Image (tube, rainbow, N blue to C red; front, side, top):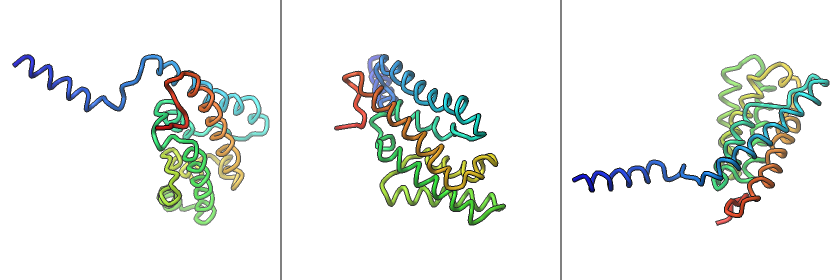
Length: 182
């Protein structure tokens, strides 16, 4: 009986935790990558963009960091998805915000839902892209006044910084590959 319970426990643990089991050293690489990626973007926000009264660090980059440093083999974390998922979503978010100013509920829901559909069509699904589209509508006045510049900076440049750091950090250890290759 005790043997059967142990076996059932091991199977359940494998099924439940199978996707989250990582080597302990991977925690260090995940930390280093996320720290550097978000840190560099935050540094630009504080030192360079503060002078211009501009926004560079947006919340969706935190979610992107989780994917590109913590789930490197996920299809949602691959470079194409990271860059184009953010770009498509930012463009949609700004466009919808310009079409429906003052209608927050409509602009927000339309931005996110259209972004998801376009990411599906283009096979560039990146969940943080939904937040990027939403931020274009609910963000501060600084973000809204950027208009289509929001697509270039902060979105494109920030996603590019995350990509460069991910390509460097995730390929240092021999057992990690980014972009993921089967």
